[in-house]
Length: 589
Image (cartoon, rainbow, N blue to C red; front, side):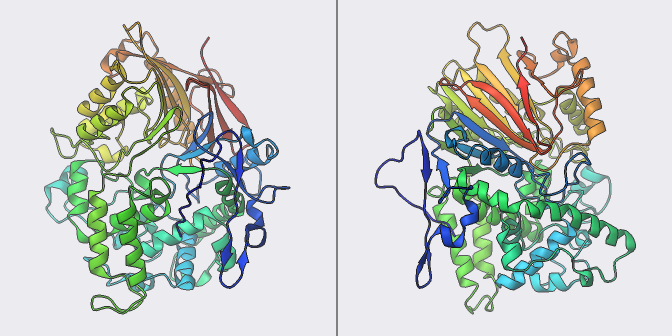
């Protein structure tokens, strides 16, 4: 349910605003009756700060429900950066002016392509108990979503059902050197979401504790594992333990979202790993009716459960079309039986979603907040179809530059860091040259010459902001860079601030090695810097106050906090970790 309210007079931007939401079937019931748990102790109503003047921003990405946790983290509802932020707000419940004006989710809010077995079982329960619609699956081995749930490959064996590239297709050979390979490349695709009702149920289960309790959803279902081997049973039990801790914190997540304005943008896992990575991937995925439906269902879920809260007016026609799809599913029509999505309506909606160019958005805040779409308007490689596409095409970048003109300061959200770790980007480049970009998820701003050149030239333009704060996620570790142009007296001040992940992180030992090698190989005076596209940029990594000698990257689940001064410059960059630490990124003196 999407509610849009319009105030009779402008809301104040310098105080906490309490709000009431009454629901009625016969009598009206306020929050005190139906949801007192979304209020902080001692408060009769939830409150929020209006995102008009940005002084404090929370941000993060990559929230994987069954991510394995560290032995250092205490038992209980830990391991989720949103729970850490809720705890931080609760400690400041009497001083809400210390709260962030906005919480920015910068990608991978769900993992549609990497779903735990117990979570898929919970999704099935939600579909059944809410009576969510079934759908006809075009080009699939199963005829519809009901048959999918009854199929032996439904749990842990979905790659057997997911679409393949055609045999003897040159595209498959360029990706994998084999005759027949899957279109979807996620390494965790054993339970990849397929149906639209699955996607909607997933959103319900990751944002709130209510569906779990109200619908009596259980994580353990021994009957679902009949016929599976012992290794699969052990995996299911391990995933259930991780999900139990995730579930234990969902009440706090629900309370947090009721008290902080939130904005979101997708990244690949909200749809599928490597989504639109290259022109070759797009040709394979959108040329198959089954994979096209899976992508379209994930986008429909994003529209309803994320995008609608960002820019409902810009997406109004799509939202109306999606609403009609669900409404008609409860009627018996010529093209679909009762309880099924109408095939023609669903395909028409997906076709419009594929053409949509309104996923990005801007808030007229101070400083301006611009959220970029780096997934659906890509600059395809002109050298080779299998090479990574630029994250934004020339037209989209020109539109971005127009938004930036004459702004004095801006907060720019780019799901992937504009300025990433040079060594890791070099490794990705080497795999691209070897024809294997999918093996290392080789997408970054510098991977495509055209997109990189235009983006870097935006920073050099005399009429674009003097203060750029770039907020990113995606990479499963956190860092902060101070960036200036070389050989320019009036260089803009650029800060690359990355917070990742909310509940996911990079392999610990591997990141430590890459972090130290990067510091040695790409030190400020290293000649290797001359081989990068950013040779005309002076990039200074900040050291965090929990770092050991030589360490710059923070590998911990949590949430980022950025404080801005009156000119839009960051005066404090922090990471609230799920281990209870408040880590500061300190500028070099």
